[in-house]
Image 1 (spheres, rainbow, N blue to C red):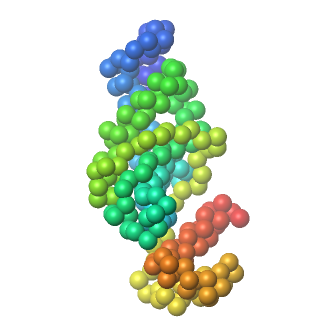
Image 2 (cartoon, rainbow, N blue to C red; image 1 turned 180 degrees about the horizontal axis):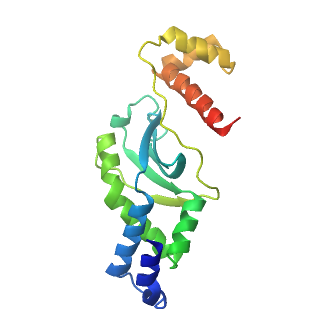
Length: 210
């Protein structure tokens, strides 16, 4: 794949990419399709106002998307009742380094093509998952760190009771019973969400060897 790309770009690179060309766009799309082949997309709901999608390959994160909904006055609303605020796409440094190494062109043009490719390839899947078509990516951010460990989010076992989840949260020592009850009353579902965050945190530390 790299040899093919370099062969196609050999003549194009010398032109400094004054204007986008269909040939160049096809090459970048082909590279991205190859790079993301076999990727798994994992969905996580942090709050009613914040949802994320992690793109993982071979146990490492290669891209993630964070969606923000509502504003400060929407604390007690469900996501479907909130207006869409913005969508942030984050690309790990090592992934973008691979892209710029194999595709020697202006960074601004690469960013543009990356956003266009994502819109064509995955945005529709995210919109379907969220059940709304007003979602879009408003910002692309290249991180200053490499992709982290990535794994499928742990889900709540069917036989776990609320009392057991509360007991697990109490054992962590971060919250007292009055705090747990206050948060659950203010944000129904907080107990389950916090319980799952603890389980996922423990799995992350296990995989990290901590």
